Image (cartoon, rainbow, N blue to C red; front, side, top):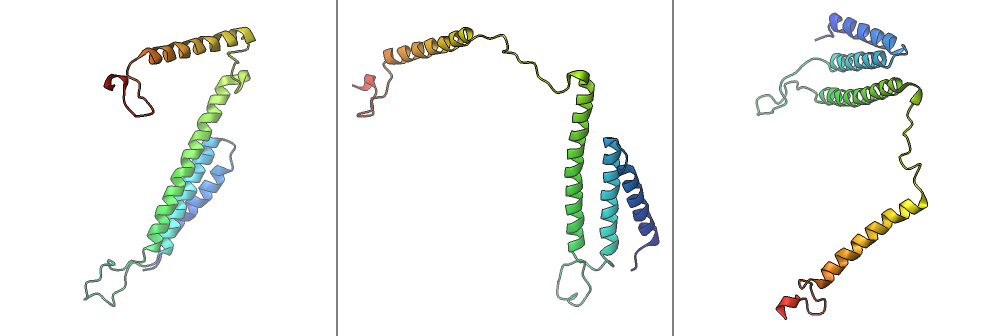
Length: 158
């Protein structure tokens, strides 16, 4: 079997359209162009895989029959996975650029929530945590359910 002229023309048109669309400034058009080029690459691998053969199951009677080469199929699956990964990355870039364009003059700045905090207010917040820790430690010390480190028994067991 020779390569179908229709597939060759479709592949060439997809490559040409994909490269042309990728040269635009819009990220959406770059994504569309990349998808076209990725699918054209899959068609190219399909065309270059050669004629189809019999199934690769050898049962004794088909020892000398031509068999299908699995390498082009593996290459196509790999190309599909790479195409999917880069498409997801481009979609994330498109979303991020849309989000930044929506913010306008503010850009990507995050307001500082603690700009008005003083050293005293910070110390008092940490002091409250220290007081809580001490209260918890006092409760644990007063409890009779502690494990004795020396002989691994609780106070109730003594």
